Image (tube, rainbow, N blue to C red):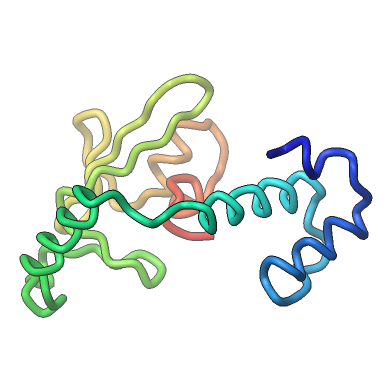
Length: 140
């Protein structure tokens, strides 16, 4: 599918985007970004949705946790508008190494140590200052 877009002009990519999404993309998006998202959306449009077993599992989880009020406040970390239940594992591969963080009631656990923030963990992993929410993909 990538070949379909690889050799067309940026103008034609923008036309394809408008046809696919019904509006122009944000300014400044790279050619690579446009192509990847057009291909992804084509795959979504071609698929018939989730498999029966996946849908059954989602329905089971929905019925188990039908409302957020069933969760105690102590069971949930709130990160940039996302609620993350204690025990949730955040996984990130960085420079070929897998890093796994567990969300706790008040903080995070990484490699057997407690941290108050994801940023502290991201800084330890990378050796530079990072927004932890961005590094672990829970915020843009």
